[in-house]
Amino acid sequence: MNQTDPLPDSNGIDGGEKLNFSTKLAYGAGDLGAAITGSILIFYLSPFLTDVAGLRPELAGRTQLVGKVWDAVNDPMVGVLSDRTTSRWGRRYPWMIWGAVPFGIFFILQWLIPNFGGGEGRQWGLFWYYTIISILFNTFYTVINLPYTALTPELTKDYNERTSLNSFRFAFSIGGSIFGAIIALIALAKFADKGQAYLFIGVICAMFAVLPIYFCVWGTRKRVAVVAQKYADAETPVNIPIAEQIKIVFQNRPFLFVVGIYLCSWLSLQLTAAIIPYFVTSYMRLGDRDVSQVILAVQGTALAMLFVWSAVSQRVGKKATYFMGMTIWIFAQSGLFFLQPNQVGLMYVLAILSGVGVSTAYLIPWSMLPDVVELDELETGQRREGIFYSFMVFVQKICLGIAVYLALETLGKVGYIQPKAGIYQEQGEAVLWAIRSFIGPIPTLSLVLGLILAYFYPITRELHTELLLRLNERRAQLPEEEKE
Image (cartoon, rainbow, N blue to C red; front, side, top):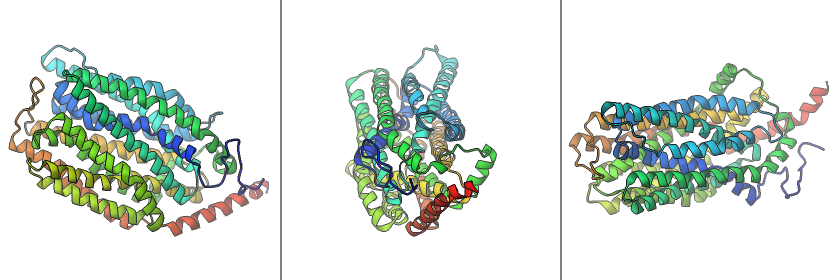
């Protein structure tokens, strides 16, 4: 059979580029677990460590930095290993299947508060406990999430279908974040003891995080098998040494632009997410309930806008869509710095506007990445989704670790006062100024830099179409070349 012919299977999935709804749904669901746990950690782990477990802000920031640095370091390793994996389940699925349950268990363990006595010994006991658990959790987070993210180009080669596919992915991603915020809202209202509330959040979210991973495997494996059969010459395991792969990755100019765009937008998002609980409680002088409501306003709007931006992207292209979203986000982000404590209504308006822009930060860079993978295939003759996706996730996790570390380290140095008996303390001017800086001008500058990088991103829709034509021509000729 010719490689360009569709290859139907029993579910009506063929080798054509249009994906059916059930495949997109199953693929999107695969990001639910990472989204639920990731959003809970970024929004709630810092206040849990500083205000409930009683860890000093500096140590709370450092334990998360260590965990995320390790998390980032193990990404290239898992990426390369998944590229080289051969099994009856393919390259990606064995990692997802075996990593899901430990992933849930170690998430729960992050919300326990061990008894290490008092004084300085307790501080370091908690620091090492949460650091070790963070390392173990992040190991299994990578084991399931990195192979999952590398599935995108294995499901479709079509430019617009990839944007649509990522719309489903990030619909579940943002939906998982919303689900986590709702669970937190309920738990913090239900339990007088905040330690019990956070443990409840951990258990419920872990249950809902693990099961969708298996649904994703079940719902996408036939489509991946069909595409792998159609492009069999592109699915051989990678045999280039790791050092050489890294060198080639960094010689891919469009990939460096995608990394820069993603770094700038994601650093802004992570800085904002890390400081929101302190901004709402210490600066706006509101309660835990309002923290969850602000998160819901941002993420709910981002979810609603995902499919809008996907449709816009199909009409005007990815770069123009990114510019539209970032402009709105910059306006909202800079406005937060000038917000006054009595302007609660305006705070929610700015949160909604931020959500409009945040959705493009989720959607566009990840939609650009498969195009970069194909450019690399054209230049090298091999597909290395794992190594490219691992570097993207590497950037994401480094951004998260640095953002949380900088925010908490700064709060500790300028004199943040931890709550006593669950009651928030009045903070000094230096603390309030630090909080406002981390939610206003610093993220805004990062977003502006991302816009500059997006302006110079070289792969347009027209260039991608030409790229696919050249790839298809080479794939059609490859069997004849091998015969020679």
